[in-house]
Length: 102
Image (cartoon, rainbow, N blue to C red):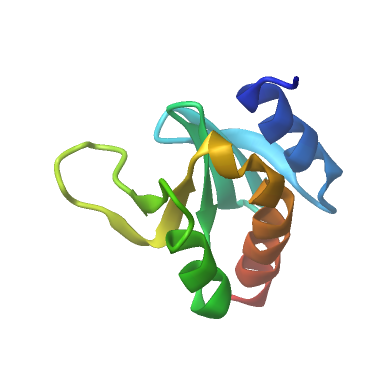
């Protein structure tokens, strides 16, 4: 079984134009300098909008990303549990499309 961090990097490296970086001190991937996925608490976090955001937030264990832990979630970012790791690649692709379209 693949470890959560290893899967995160496997997905990140597989996406066109994605480069590793850091977001709030956490590993992330960026396209053209804009972060679209990151890794936090052994879970993957995605910058999403529209239907993709809705689908991600409805997954069991998902929540809005709150890196400070002070109840100030980032509304576009959804943290998705490892139990839903089979969906991570598709969500990462949606996040990449979203960030490129901005």
